[in-house]
Image: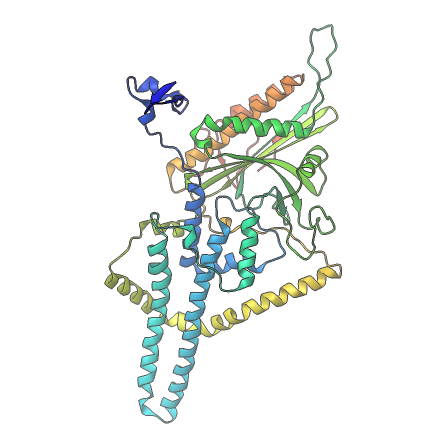
Length: 515
């Protein structure tokens, strides 16, 4: 006990950094005053959300894609979006589309009047060139205003690192959109993923590393002349539970795992849930994001072709720029145990959206000059394309409602609809390169540390249940010897092996052909 201001308190534990007690390296100093750089809770979500919100202003087509995926498609499931506040990004996307729609309406009207005055100039009125010139100047100012509003007034004034606040996101203009975003906010976290086609792990990026174990589960021999003892009874769900607990305990061992999230999720194909009331209570609404935990347990013990339970280990880093996710599934059948695991990486956000960190607020006259120069460069294409864009903006909401009504009509009459999620808005904004050397290094570290934790957990679990580890040790040795040479991205280790979308690596006979 220590006394502070006359009050007895328990002393705070000695801080640990990279597995070492700080008092060992700072003798004679109060270790409580030593600041250890640790990730701030929620920082990853805030930064990734900030970049995507800015992306909606920089790239209007991306903003349109966000609104289509989140708001306009009301029957499909939403893909998991790691580290991103989807409603906030969607609100900013709606604002960007409103600004662009106003620009296109004004330019279309200006172009119509210019054509009209040009006809008058040719046929009758020689002074028609004056209103034509004025309309061109007005069009130039409209295009410049669009850039000023999106870039200077929104991105720079509200989305730089020290200025961004999620609560500043503008409210949608329509009640239906407000209700949709409120529903998405309430369903942010869940244990059900409904996917489309072959993209079971939708929203998690690219598969970079896959491995599997196939073990003949036999009892441990006590002596040569004594037959093998039958292993203790266990289920696939028991092994899943042990893995979840192990990764929870790993949280304090490595700084890279400080924000780890571990959970079980049920993965179901969107074509297979239409008549399942547990997975789709209402055929005329999108699937729920959560199911009862008993259903998770049942799918782990008795997996079906349509639904399977995985343990998901999410490891975010670099303030949401890197998300490594490990998916693990165990199947215990008779005297055999099958364990598979897949690492998927959500790459950093595209470099064209990271440029906002190089921006800063300019004096007003320089802002206007930059906007006017942009308007001058973009005037001709923006003006000529404005009629088609204005018509599309005007008709798009109506077309989406008409399409939604047709789908509801078809589903009521037996149409088989795919409720599976498409790509997430975070995946759509991802780039292909690791811009930082250490980011690629950390990607490798996350994978190797997580795999080591997984294999150690399976080993301990099998030992505790009286399983002979002969096959396990042989397979794990091969996996470890080869995986320690692996590296991610463009930086190769001495083995010259790269994990990536187009790479292959044969670790053992059981894993040949896995990409």
